[in-house]
Image (cartoon, rainbow, N blue to C red):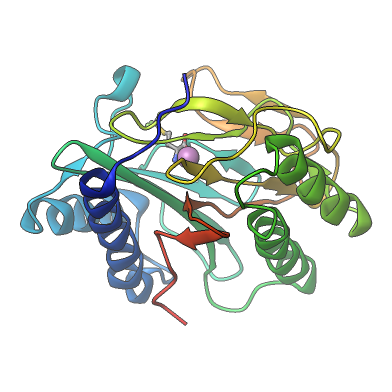
Length: 251
Ligand code: MF3
Ligand code: CO
């Protein structure tokens, strides 16, 4: 069931989304060679608590941390650990924050020091693929229109598409209907309506589409070892278009 949020719920989701944006802005200066992903996780955990909110990934289906920290060939759901980041890495920070029961969710990929042109290309075009998807958000359009826009952009830039994972509706639960694949035909799937809130989240690879999952049952990696990027926003369907509830405050 796809939920439609009323005005009060939308206010709470805006608040949750803004906390997600603020947390990303807060953590960005710490993303440097020498820091561990555990340290980033702890900083973000404390930031969320101080803001009277809930780190929703922590304990979700047994997930052990506040953040997902996915480095280089890790696509998503990288578990924070004591490995130090090094110059040339890229790292996706993905977080879900709950405020008075309503969730906000955003991921973006950051550089550590100077990274290769390949990684810059991957990041730039993964973020642009997200915006191509977001541009399709308006009442009357269908989920497939988003999926197809992301796929067309990604393939047009020769990037691999992770097909096993998709975007999703969001509200009191971090994952609600509908699923939002990052590929597929346009003109199919549920129609968007004012008051729906969805997360669009292309996960694109510099190499092929294929992935595998580590024995920890969380960490998703590219099969060919090539880097992967992930950009995600929580987006409200408005009367005539959309509003991004997790705006970037960091650039
Ligand atoms: N932001 C992720 C998503 O879009 C959060 C899931 S991680 C989990 O699904 F640990 F909470 F499962
Ligand atoms: Co999400």
